[in-house]
Length: 317
Image (tube, rainbow, N blue to C red; front, side, top):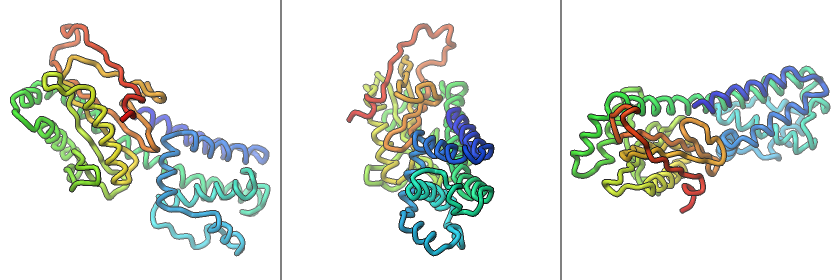
């Protein structure tokens, strides 16, 4: 959640650098903007998905410019995804055509000031708006899952653990129903499992046809039931498959931890982000651990075993 907030701030700063750039710096700042997107795994993953969804090849732009049309002339976008994809691919075409980002020296969009205004207002801004929208939507889901974690750990853990311990089977279903009810109360419509995908049935899937889907897999860690760390690994592989099946770029793994253990996710990047976040195959996966092992205070709990989970361990099949 905090990482996404910082990323939104970075995006605005990259745009501000373009606004402040003079004639000699404009091309450099445009290159800086594109390079930052391509080097950031979250943003690059978003771009890859929208380009696959709405592809405009170089021939398309070549034809537009050869006809001496304004490239934006009568361009009607199906939605903001298509607009962002169009604008990003236009930037890539410009680089392909002139070998750099000094488009203001070509007069394709008129004089220097018109070119600068077009770059910022008509090309860069729609891309940034789309990024902001995607990051905000992801933040809202993370916020709800973090809120649920606090709700259970602070208020309902004892009651929920009692139901779990008294159950004779379908332990995950019991916890899943508790999370579903919470999400429904928070405004998530129809947070239910869907018909099976190619990889099975996700635990909680909502708003799958929208640009803000909720794909959640639930796993339990409990040595008394012989549910070990392998459950976390299998849960990760399942959520990866579900995001691929539904062509979505974000997935959430909620882990109910009944053992006196602290799991520490050690990822190659973003290791200090909360909740832990792993970027894999241009998709983002969040890990939310709900500690269920005790309702004692920290002073009475004593020492807690710490187990590290690395990125390589999760990815390895």
